[in-house]
Image (cartoon, rainbow, N blue to C red; front, side, top):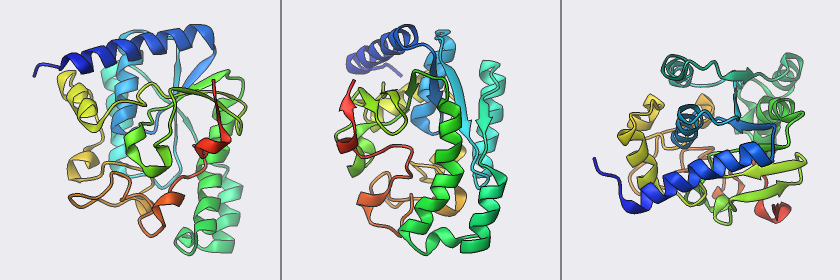
Length: 236
C-alpha cells in the first residue's frame, strides 16, 4: 500500500508534535484507551523513542480482546503499559446501591459508574504530570467536533494534547495496515469505539462511529467524564 501525500504529511506533523510536547511539557503521559487511534500513538511514541509515558485504565469490565491487546503491545514494543484500577471500596458501594449493572437505569447512574471506574483512576494517573496526550479525533462524535490540537484542561489542571485531532477514519486504518500496528480484534467485528463490555456494542452500516457506546442514551451526552465539553476548555 502506498500512503497518500496528505497522510505522510500528517504522520510527520504528528511525530514532530509529540516530540515537541515531550520536551516543552515534561513530564507528559499518554492515556491509551487501546482503540485504533491510541495504537497509532503507541506506535509513534515507541518507534521514535519519544519521552512520553503510556498508561491505560482497567475498569474491571473490559472485553477479553482488550486484555489480549495489552499482551500484544508487550511483545511488539517490549513495553509494559502502566495500568490504573478503580478503588475497590468505591465499586463495592456503587454495586450495593445501584446493582451490578445499575448504569443502564439512568444517565446519572452511568456517569457515576464512569466516575468511579475511569475518572478516579485517571486523576491518579495524571498526578505530577504537566500534560497528557489523547487519541481523540474530531470525526469521532458530535461532542468532539470542536476539538483543538492543544488546550488547557480546567478539570484536571494541566495541558491536554490531541495529536490526531484532524485525522480521519481512512487515515487511521491506512496507517495501521501500512505499519502493521496491532489493534483490538473487536474492530474487525464492527466495534469502531471500544469501552467497557456492558456499554459497548457493534454498530450497523451507516451508524455514527460512537453509536455503539452507551447506545441507550442521547448522542449529545455520550462522554464519560474523561473528556469534558469544549466550552469548559481554552486553547493552550
